Length: 483
Ligand code: ADP
Ligand code: ADP
Ligand code: MG
Image (cartoon, rainbow, N blue to C red; front, top):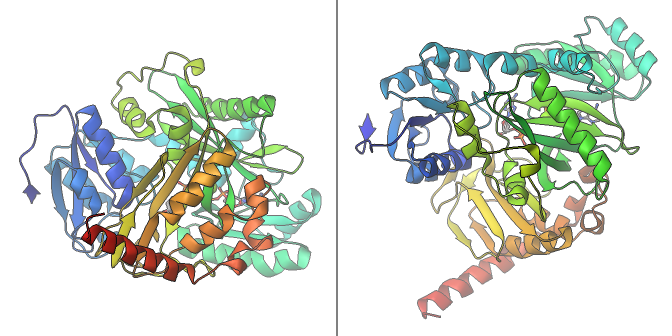
């Protein structure tokens, strides 16, 4: 079923995703003059992304397996609507090489990298091996799956404890377990393998050194099909819960004004991207120790959730560039020096979750209003009446603030959080608010141990919701009176 007449636009792009990223991609398509085609399903018959699309198509199904994760149905749909390209967003099929392959066999452009790059980087063992071969530093440990617990213990003895057991097929922060001694390795090895097999269809594990109090630092890459590979500087994503990011910023406060280090990190990322002949937008993730040694973690062969902070400091539209690269169009970037950065940007992931336990808290959005300071960007999928279900990721929006320096960005984020009203369900807004005024974060002194050790969640003021409620009432009263 197709609604609305096609416009006479340059190319037809099917957006195989939902939520905020589907809106973001639709807007980029429109900007380029392409026809943005959005999907709706039985599971989610409406969504804000459809508002920014030129055409809407129905994909039958009540579960993700029947819809956004269904290669066969999505490829058939893309053919039926005569798509020239498909943008997968993030999550779902964005790093699925069968999907990319099937599209290319159908003569449809997968808006992402070539299939071989997805394959090599999609596995934490093959990617680590490639990094080692390319001379990119990797975390001490193995770059192949460790078959037995005895071998795992041997390797751990060699590299020293603590170690991390890590699923080669893991993702989304899942499939990892820290072990402090031999007994823990013996206790955990089979269990982590079984969990990985259940979650990722692959029980293979790596053993690597656990870097203590590390920083998560990643580099945005953009490459085209003509062999041009650029970096867009780094992001720091060390504020994490369950190995998943909550707050990201660019540039990294840990690298700070160490331009030599910054350049080394960025150039290392480019080296790796070139080694796999990368040809799209992607991210090379590193873990950096307290001693500023850095090691390759993984490469995400897709656009990432936190790409907006890079856009804010560089002024470039990464999704536009990614689409241009996929269709073989000119990027209009003459050299690496053309890409400059200025100022500081912070992103807070707004999630429908309990602000203290940080566990998903689905529910119905009964009210949604914004009143932001200058310099705020909000990429989101919120509307009054949105039902947040356990079927999808609990992230409902990304609040992004930019300032001329970090302090200003933090202050603006504080004001922006005060200007975001989401009612009807629990969100992590009170936690984000707490972090934005917490001394260690404000000073830029934090590692991935921040949530575990500083534990800002323990100071969350849950009565903040009431304050917001009164503010909304005051706001609607004021509007009623025409103020
Ligand atoms: P990013 O790396 O873009 O900052 P995440 O790593 O949190 O973001 O992943 C992006 C999205 O993809 C999230 O919605 C996450 O839940 C999902 N995701 C990533 N990898 C997997 C995976 N292997 N299995 C399931 N979901 C995943
Ligand atoms: P995923 O595919 O789930 O994103 P990553 O390898 O990127 O997996 O790791 C996710 C997070 O786990 C990192 O940002 C970091 O916080 C932590 N982590 C991963 N490897 C290590 C390590 N060797 N030492 C310390 N922390 C690590
Ligand atoms: Mg990662």
